Amino acid sequence: MRCFITLLILLACQQAWTQNAVGLANLPVRNQPGKPTSVAITPAEEPSVNSLIIPFNRVGNLIVIKGIVDTTEGNFIFDTGAPGLVLNLTYFRQYATTEVDERGSASGAVVGAVQTMVNRFSFGGLDFKNVKADMISLGHIEDRKGIKILGLIGVSFFADMDMVIDYEKSLIYLHRITKKESNTYKNKMLDSTSYSELEFDVIDNKMILYVKLGDRKMKFFIDTGAESNVLDSRLPNKVFESITITGRTKMIGAGNKSVEALYGNLKNMKFGDRELITLPFVITTLENVCISELCCIDGILGFEFLSLHKIGFNFIKRKMYIWK
Image: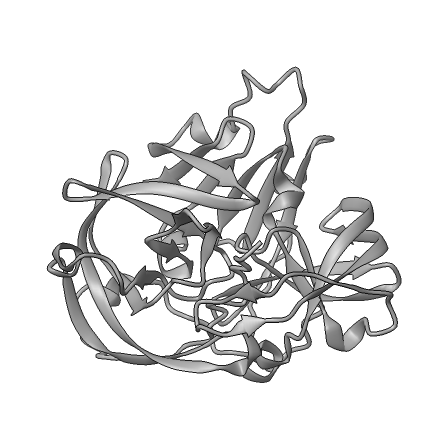
């Protein structure tokens, strides 16, 4: 597996874009690193038997959830760019490991990973036994965010679920879809509000969304662990005619490697029936971020897109919902 898309744009970017760039004024205000916000579940929001509501903290633009690996409890980053459970090697050195293939990151670094098995992993009321986990150093994220990170929670844990992420309330709503519900389940939040519906794929535990820029159909990873949106610098010149460059940024990826990249606003990208006038992107090569030798992506959609609206995913029907 070449792609280990997490770590990537946990990029804790040292952004240096122009403050008055078009469209940036409408983005949500960012919390300062190391100063997470928290939220309590009110009685009206208590989950049903098959449903859970998980409060999260925001650390910078990352979603941080409490979790427990065997007897070790602490912070985990909710990262749909990760395939499953990823543990910080610093805190789990006593576990038996096996080596796995090298994996690439968006910063161009090659990450050496090992795997282990944990007896039990739980978070937010979900409990899993005999879980395979990748192990790699997350020290560069801890240093930049100022908090202890035990690991990353990836997309495979949600394969049979309906998920809604509400950045404004700092809540994740989960519903485990039963076999009886697989063809009929509809999230109640969709009944009373206007929303757009898009199809997405899950390939090798990577969430892929197809969007349009003019007549060009483009593939993007959906990555809650990416603090910025990313566009592949190898795309045709026609794509970059739609971008206004606003500055430069430093990207910090796996192995604490940094690369300089351009930052700008992409105009008129279409998500189903919705067109965004402008959306900020970091521009860098994504040649190391592929699902296979024949299937690479055009970009990554992270916090700067996902946090604009309440957003949902039905992993059984492969439907994505964007609230208006």
